[in-house]
Image (tube, rainbow, N blue to C red):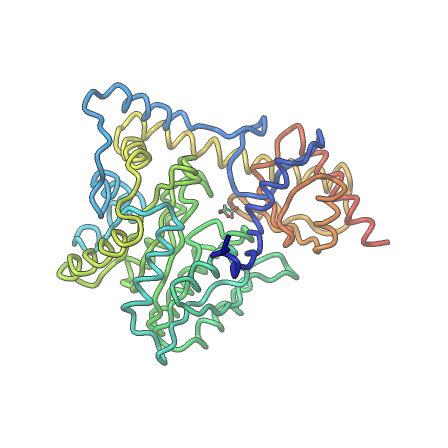
Length: 411
Ligand code: LMR
């Protein structure tokens, strides 16, 4: 038989999702998954948030609940509530109805459509369709932006020598970009480094955006999950919006509601005047229609209930505290095991100062490979660990292995 697929080359595996598969197939009893950023409870199990369970119960009890298609824009209650969560009740753009909100296939769908909208319509400086991404960033940002025809260039962000933000390098990079450049930023809980600008540093960055007329492309995947407070985690987005920086925000509900596989998110494009909303929205709608037709309804209904029903909303605020505090506890437990029990050489303070789901340990590739091959501890080779994979039963085991690979390297 003729093989119509004979010219298809094998694609390289995805660095993060491959770890999930490798972990699953490892029979070792002490294996630990610190790879993918997905929340686990104290017993290493996925957690269905009580607020989400309550919302699903309400849907099940609702005799009117049906399964019709959503519109191309998405579920209106969900869109209204998600924009309010992100921009806050004092937002001028929200009050003036200058935000184009569309439901998306989670944050990734929003990145794709947001990138595509810019690729099609943005007046890029020097005619170069380029988006600047932080060094490092979520690896999929590159693939997604290239897929819509945007070139990527990295800007200085993380300083591996100090395990912290290189704010001077970041500001210099922003100043050196041509005016009107598009800059992709993590709204909070930077993935993979766990290093965010402070509020004062966001204000410094804002000043340069204003001077240079840059466009802010926010990826917001951890609102509420990072600090436990959704308002605090929206600081950067709200600051830029209040100062009328041209912007869009890709909003994901995967982590902060635990609805990872339901693919719930939104794209919010802030436009200068309400007159522009219908034009821009019509193009986003048309794009969604040509690619996925309409978004899934189930998760949007759940999130809409979680954000709008007062009891469920209060429960959700408690749930995000449970998740973020457990992660903070694990930061502390790992730090204490390394510094007090094992007295591992080196400084480990960054584990405590980083925020969100991840920590960049600062190990080299070889040390990471040993953790996986000999210790059965799965992590990205950049030494990014997802702290949610740690729990009281495995944190000592992980610390003992980190200690071992650090000491061996020092010999
Ligand atoms: C991660 O960075 O681990 C998550 O955002 C999951 C993913 O799809 O990569």
